[in-house]
Structure formats: structure tokens, C-alpha cells
Length: 177
Image (tube, rainbow, N blue to C red; front, top):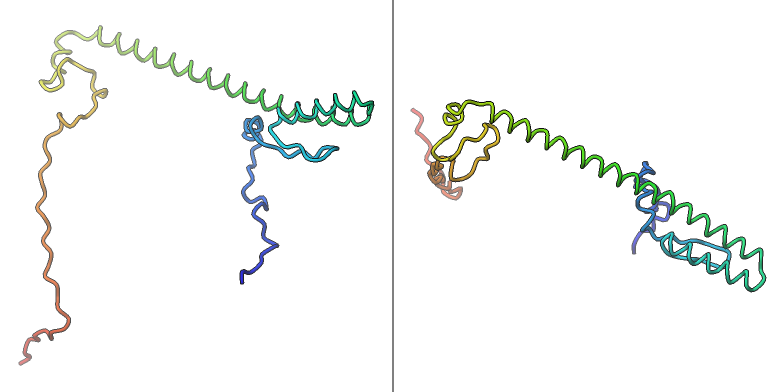
């Protein structure tokens, strides 16, 4: 029989995230269970907003203004959640795009500096950097080690094992004189 540990729940909170800014991006695709006035509504925030809006229209057409207002309030709650999450996603996307543009600009500047340095070097210095295997002169530090450029590795000797000691036969003991 399996022991019952009802006091220990899997969802106690030990695994919850502390940072709410990361959760906002997840809200757009997250599935919610909304306990509304007429039972549960399940879906993403966009689906829940559409469902509550439709329920509000139906209640208004049937003449129940109180139920219509209740459904509209539920719809507004989830539309606010969705708006905040979408703003957060747009902000992160803008930051990411700006970061990529900055990195591209830095790379362009580095490439221009390298080109300017290569043009300023005298031709004799460029030839002295060239090696027969490497081909044309390339700035040191930018070469990548390839297997063709590496010297061949020496093959190591195979290891020999010591003979196994038999524990069955008594070993010869030196005579004590």
C-alpha cells in the first residue's frame, strides 16, 4: 500500500518564478481557467475576451443588463492582461532589435579599422607575415587552426598490463636466515 502524503503538494510554490516581467511574455499563449458568472471559461486571454464579449452580447440581447455588465467586466480584465503582455513583448522586441543594430555597427567599425590598418602597413611587412601554408597575409590572431596546419600527432605506445596476480596459489616467501 502506498503512503499518502496529502500535506505535501506539488504546487506548494517552491518552483514559482520570482520575476514577474518574464511571466508577462508568457501570458499571451498561456491557457487560463476563468471562473465566470456562468461557469468556467478556458483558453488564452484572447479567446477568453472573445468568449466573454459574446456572452455579454447574448445577455444584453436577452435583456439581462446585470449579467451583460458582469461579462463585460470579465472581458475587460483579460483584455488588460493581454494588453500589458503585448506591450512587454513589443518592448523586449524593440530592445532586441536595438541591441542587434548596435552589434552590427560595432562589427562594421571593427572591419573598417582592420581594413585601414592593412592599408597602412608597408607591403614588405605584409609579405613577412605570409606563410607557405597560409597563403596570403592575414592579420595574426584571426587565423583559425585547421587540421592541415597542425603537425601530425605522435602515436602513443599501447599500454601493457601487468600480469594478474593469482590469489589461489601461495606466493613464495623469501627465506629468513
